[in-house]
Amino acid sequence: MSDAPVWTPDRTIALVGLMGAGKSAIGRRLANRLGLPFMDADTEIETAAGCTIEEFFERFGEAEFRAGERRVIARLLEGKPHVLATGGGAFMDPLTRAAMRDRATTVWLRADLAVLIDRVGRRGHRPLLKRGEPREILERLIAVRYPVYAEADIVVESRDAPAERTTDDVMAALHARAARQHATDQALAMPGDAAIRRLSVDLADRPYDILIGPGLIADAGRHCRPFVPKGRAIVVTDDNVARLHLEPLVASLAAAGIAAPVVTVPAGEPSKTFESFGRLMEQLLDQRPDRGTVLIALGGGVVGDLTGFAASVLLRGVDFIQIPTTLLAQVDSSVGGKTGINTRHGKNLVGAFHQPRLVLADTGVLDTLPRRELLAGYAEVAKYGLIDDEPFFAWLEANAMALLDGDAALRTHAIAHSCAAKARIVRADERETAGVRDLLNLGHTFAHALEAETGYGDALLHGEAVGIGMALAFDMSVAMGLCPEEDSARARAHLAAVGLAVSPRGLAGENARGWDPSRLVEHMSSDKKNRDGKLTFILARGIGQSFVERGVEPEHPRATFARALAT
Ligand SMILES: NC(=O)c1ccc[n+]([C@@H]2O[C@H](COP(=O)([O-])OP(=O)(O)OC[C@H]3O[C@@H](n4cnc5c(N)ncnc54)[C@H](O)[C@@H]3O)[C@@H](O)[C@H]2O)c1
Image (tube, rainbow, N blue to C red; front, side, top):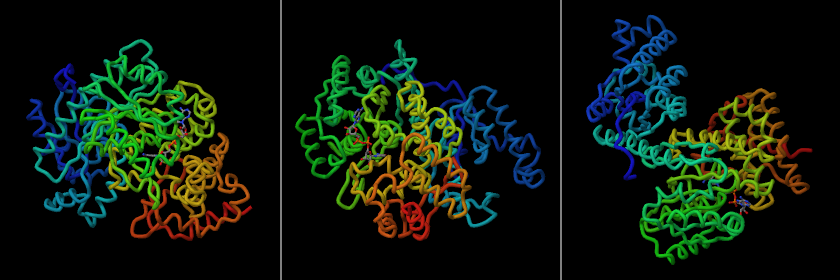
């Protein structure tokens, strides 16, 4: 953005990450480049305590150490802007984390397991690693800490590359964040913008904003303009959405000086086949796009997945903007960068990770969405509460009916909260390599089996299958002795109260009686989440306490299906 000011750090930049992520090495270089002092929280703690951290731990224990660390970091954050490297556990402490987020720009240096093993293996002095096998310890730390580190403002991949390179990446991410904030601050400076919520998804190399609220489509030109520098875009939509919401979009783009021809695909999942993808690519090429042409996806998850994938390969990759029009697309498919199409081997098996430049979630368009589609999307909203956010689930219990019935402010809150939850999990594991992103699949292993059985069609919508799947995942967790029955009953009661099915019996009517639990379990074996032929499930220890369990014996889901299908 040419009119963005050159970024000058007006607050401390605090680096977080695991041991071996490069906080000190990169922090020193960063400080040097920004002309700021560098501080290492661990060194400051040792100076304050008059002993090494290891000695402090041994003498006083972890709780005392965290309290001391909290005081030292709070003191450092009070001072002039600097670059601060923090210990791996500092950001895990809720109070320290809140202080850091409040007073600093937090940067998570995220490193893959292999990179960490290589780095810490070369330096054998890490006290934490003396307690066992480094790989296992690091794996455990990644599972617990990465979802929390993901709350940092910026995430930068700490690759197997010289520290100078990663420092370049941090500098670029800091600049990009500042420029983007400047652009959207300007874009949101109009009357009426107060009802719009902005969320930043600070992914390492492709950060973007999500704007949520009413009236965004009618104003899309203004919001999209900074991301369409050449003024050339192509809108992709489906025939239902075109009828209802295309006109104001095209008018708004034109008013902002964006030329945007439209390509319309038939509504529904069949548009995600190879054949229709091929047709779409030809239609896009008919418009003679160049590398600066931006695709704009206006529609539900089908249009978003299809357009995103087209953008990832058109002319070897062009930018795209998501304007999701279903609740499911607003809270789930438009965030996270997964794009793709279906094959006869299964859904979404051909695709790419391709992040959008901007997401505009216009809550007003949900008024035209059929109630059944709205409810199917709501299952994904409830999912975020069930995964790791009991307070949000409680909020939904109190507000779901009003938001489903159309309360705009409640809808905006629920969508923003859901997007933030998804963004946090995606940042922890953008490419699904750390196992954290699997949590988003709560209920999905069961859902996948039910959708396969019903032929991925109108008989059972994806969100409806997820609703049933979550109820079954809780039921299985209870049967495996992991979760109290009250929590499972509470999850089921809420899903049922809003009008979602919680059992395959209820939905598929008489036919479901004849379903064979073993065949349903067979459908699960082709799930992408499974590794080494073992079944992977997201199970729960309670509401908001989900976890990934690999290697589940097929007997457990079989028995769960059998219980659910019995009268
Ligand atoms: N990429 C991801 O991370 C991700 C995540 C979840 C689901 N998905 C994919 O999303 C797809 C499902 O998305 P979906 O549920 O949005 O389905 P969809 O895109 O088929 O939309 C559902 C129906 O609603 C209509 N519609 C859309 N917006 C409307 C509006 N505002 N008013 C009236 N009608 C409207 C559509 O024309 C369609 O008929 C699946 O293909 C699934 O694989 C992708």
